[in-house]
Length: 116
Length: 116
Image 1 (cartoon, one colour):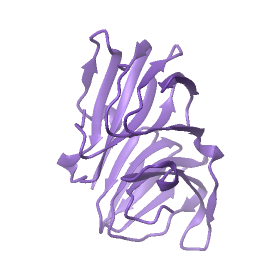
Image 2 (tube, rainbow over the protein chains, first blue to last red):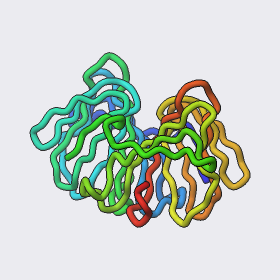
Image 3 (tube, one colour):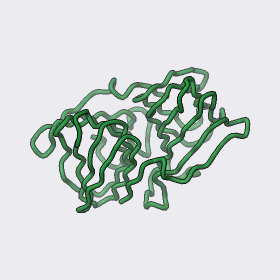
């Protein structure tokens, strides 16, 4: 059993131009005995975004706080607290903060993918 | 691709004594093409709780709003917005609302388990 607040997990920063103002954390992963899927939590600062990219594995996302948009296969989808987004494997996608506060969301992937 | 607010998904109520004041929703599942793991969102009303039970599959939980406690293998863990809990397969567990507002959390399971 593991119980933490997501903010207690080690943070990896992504701010190389392709990504801007993104902090990612693996909160449940293989090290915890989770062998099928992995939970990460991301915080995107105002004006920030994840890279626009595609990969073979899917994302299951839940939006916790803030306001944003998800670009997926040419569509733009607004997201707010309680929004749920499924990005299938192979779909080009990007998450953007569209508000003044951090955009915080949970993003799960299968264990076959890199954890972060 | 799928994008909804969790409250738009069909609701299944659990209020048979073992569970009290629990509303569950499958928000991403096999019907959406999610073949490895399934996302559900649960709302527990004030005074409510899930059944105290155990099963072979694991839970990965993220707490979105409200205040509660998770009982797991004899431990009591307080949860609040942003809490993350991993319940391994086989562990006895129960989620209880400990506050005046709905307790809302995301609970993911492998696709081999019943979706709800």
